[in-house]
Image (cartoon, rainbow, N blue to C red; front, side, top):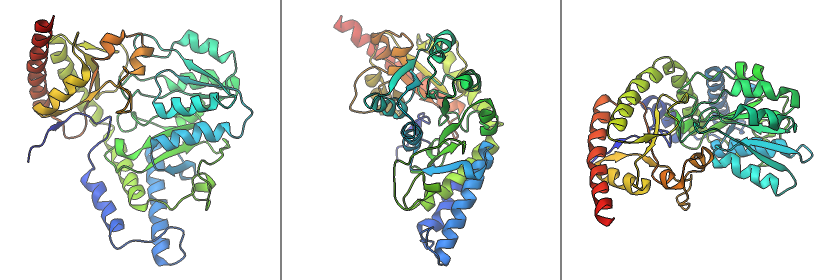
Length: 385
């Protein structure tokens, strides 16, 4: 069977065999509802409690601070909308490069009487410190800045940003979905700096789809998005997805063990990748900023990113284009627009994101296929002109 080389780990990751093994019993005979009082239910509750402990330990949090959700999008919405529901409408500030699952609920609040201000970034995708300092003078009630961007991989100094926001009294949230497993993430240290909540997701760390968490300072009062039986401290009602939560716990445990070595391994591969990209004329975005060790975002002049992704797919390489996080939206990346990248360049954006299982051979073969494919597309462009 044809098996393309997978280079799209920021979108989702393969399920780790150890995670799968932990989940299998809960997909078979262990069928209990964790709210039931019989033995099946008690075992399910114990499994969830153990997974919560594993995730908390991996993040330097306390188990009571972990609220399980169905995904990162739900967790981000839970913070943005849930925190706002207990406040009078005020100012919400989010970085201009946030994932749509932060930008869109913030925009919904703006239609409900809140004032929304996007925090500007520079040409390398970093929050502009002067613009941020000026914004804080308006005393936002809610602030959300992601730790690492899903497209560019650019890392923000979230601890410093949160510390600066303390004087405003704002609740500060960070989407750390892309950072967890690729960088050390310690909620206790972030919390001490002024971060009140972070979002993590299982399927970005070789866990299953359908499980994520909002890790929340218990001083923050949230209104639930889903009301019902009062699950997850009353913040997320609904029968728990026991197999996915069990898998999440194991994946988090493995991610914490690997974070000492895996980033260095990925950085070596990324350096080789970007050396090859530069040699064949690619423009690498945010190259001067601190970035995730696995992420490279680039474009070639006069070559459409979607077209290039399709050609590479047929050559046996799975990568991502720089389009918005919706197959129905053909617009150039809002992240690149916020960075001031011209639309004609942004439309050519392609992302390679590395993960466990990738090798130097993958990189060599990819560069060779990319060079040949770009050469053919540039030849067609020259003929058309």
